Amino acid sequence: MQLKTILLIAAFAATIPAANWMIGNVGECIPQGPCLIPVGFGLDAPSGALLVGLALVLRDWVHEAGGAKAALAAIGIGGLVSWLFAPPALVLASVLAFVIAELADLAVYAPLRAKRLWLAVLLSGIVGAAVDSAVFLWVAFGSLGFIAGQIVGKLWMTLIAAVVRAIGRMRSAA
Image 1: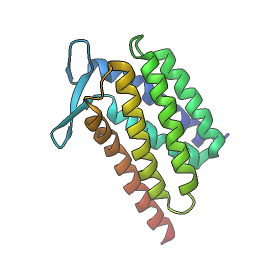
Image 2: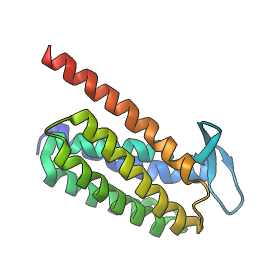
Image 3: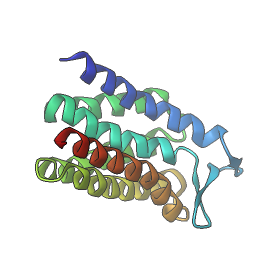
């Protein structure tokens, strides 16, 4: 495995405990609930949403650098890291949301990446963000009350990555 792939997997895995830590420590904290940050459009989201959005993008980059096997290995490592580092109240929600969302993201990304990489990043990010948000919020808090903010927060990272990828493709084609 190349060093670039290993570093991307490590970055990907690091986003999980960081996102879980943020949920309990960054933003306006609700008693018995998450800490919230504004994500735009008048919406708030649990503060880990941006890092989870980054995780969805990093998984795509792992796939590009090391292929589908590396992406699946990253998902497994990320699930384990989530299990090891999430606060007990968030362990089940975090692991379930992470693994299910990453597999959904991969299922959308893999068939699209050869034709239009920027579209693969964007659409897989949308699917991953929606699945992760729904599973996490329902299992962790028994509510989908912050789902719109969660999705918007995660999509900021996906949108940024799709633009960066499109610019990168244009530059390499020139």
